[in-house]
Length: 199
Image 1 (cartoon, rainbow, N blue to C red):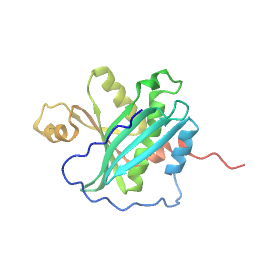
Image 2 (cartoon, rainbow, N blue to C red):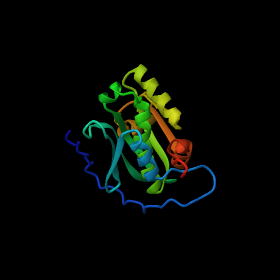
Image 3 (tube, rainbow, N blue to C red):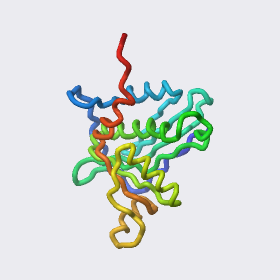
Image 4 (tube, rainbow, N blue to C red):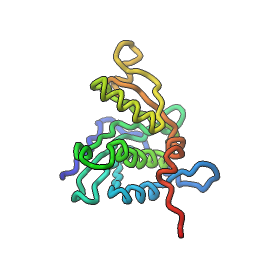
């Protein structure tokens, strides 16, 4: 399968923030990128992260289907008033996942976790996305999925007010704007990615 090209906008990208390393701490377990990659391999999934300046793409590739792409997430790390933000442009799962025993949402968690961990390593405090509203049924499923992941709805973008215009320009569609704390997401998912105890 040919790799898709990540098209960059013509505007100049902001300077990338410095990479932050994980620091051991007490409290909730925060999975590292190797933790997430190892958990994915246990599900026959290889995660591939590629970056170009502040832009990034995470691909989930099957280990038992000749490297077929099963899902991807794309976005950008950008500055904001409260610090760096992980802007998730899209997260898509392949139709091939419909025939697998693992659920689409299960595979989506691995791809999403890799994207969020990337944001954490780049100093992001907040993640943002738009649960696109193509159809009422699919939209409601997306919102439920992202809520289970730990996102909260902050605004309905439907074009009914002037305040929606900036969101329509940024996201290119209508839907539910959702936010989450990056570290809070990783802590919420920590149990799924915690390495097994050494014997």
